[in-house]
Image (tube, rainbow, N blue to C red; front, side, top):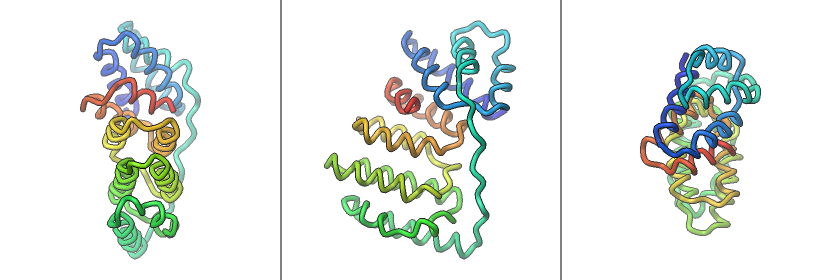
Length: 216
């Protein structure tokens, strides 16, 4: 089961870090994400009989994680709608980062909702990277808030999570900015979110910062 595989792989990676504080942090962060009923039963089956540290971590998650709701239902878009969405997303990404919030504020959110999965992922990661690059703290926070708003109907099933987590952790964001990025990541299917967090850890991102972002 892909979702269960992602949970197990991340737990194994956390334990392999060798930091005795990390498993407890990971259990808190993973429990906060929630488990769908099929994920909980699948995870329980996968770790049955395990007594290693990663198994105990996941046992704690299976026993304490909140119940996750079903994924949102997305209406299919026509080719013309997808073409219009792609053109708009490219236009929004092409301008300078300091005026990002102004461009997004005038964007037609309903048009962007028709972006195909891969194009949507590239669009969202491009927006987040542009916002995080802004040197002024107030302007950066405004841009991230606008990114969160304008992408509310954009699909995130193919979002490059590892890139967003890595860039966010490297930027050492304020609590407000980290919360805005976390709110965006909260829309991502859990298995993809965990796989992305795993990719960020394997890429050298700070483990404590990655788990803190997940916990948000």
